[in-house]
Length: 266
Length: 157
Image (cartoon, rainbow over all chains, first blue to last red; front, side, top):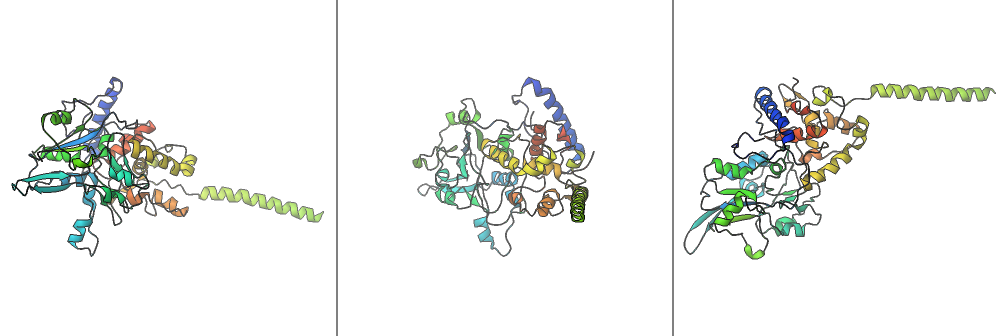
């Protein structure tokens, strides 16, 4: 079954046995959402949760077309904040705005590049690059920083001791540290004081079989379509087709990290 | 002879006292499942009650690794499922954070003098556009049609 925000022309592969039940669940969920939960936006209750461990048959990645990324637009950043509860952070009392801007958790940064020779300006979103050989994983003393089999680099907050070696090791300044007690979190995105965190390619969406990330959806809704999400190992996937057509680069290619996030036009 | 009788009498009184005390304590033992939560309407938890009381921390700890590292979200031992089922809410104020002293997790942990810090990081009320997904998955894993009941507003049908 499909998320109601998405078009219905790509049905998710469901077994014939449970499709009837899923159809019923969809109707039931819709009715429940409409009647019983006013004010609560139900994204979808019909996406099947993952019941088998992730495998390396897929590798998730992003392709960012910097030609389409608009100066001044921060739709992806805001969508990420909403999706992952980063907008629930509050400035500690007595902290200056500048200090807070430095310290608060940020999973996507809008970066502006200027070629000093030509003056050409490029805008791009920067987030965790989901390296195949992540330096953050190499340096983590507890194994909290790890790469999932499907290529997502993330932090197991249960074992993170907050040493921040990974922040030092990351060439992309992608990781944030939570300095203060968190009062509010989202159910699907646990986060709290003393842990490092970064973009996890909306890992909860992956595990519930949804097809995109919050930033991709937001970019599309803003009319730019600068970000493509997909499986880098599937030759038929949207992202691979784009990669085959346009030239793209990794940031800091010299480090041979084989990043899962690629940029075109830089 | 008299001494033996007194001793036997004392033992009998002692035994009787132990028996009475147990009955009284059992009657007095609180059930921490709160009125107004989904859990109060269900016959049992995901495992028998005595297992849950003794082993819930092992169950949760085991599934957390499967979820974080394997991405398995259909475990019936998920913390999101605990919260969705045991949360109590009233019409005006909405759901009360489950780790507060009078709520399901908080009350029992306070009684047992156990410090719990799950909710330093985990949401203590069902929250977020997709919160439903998590609890739905947990209910589905139990094998019931409890999905319809698992609502963040906690109202009865």
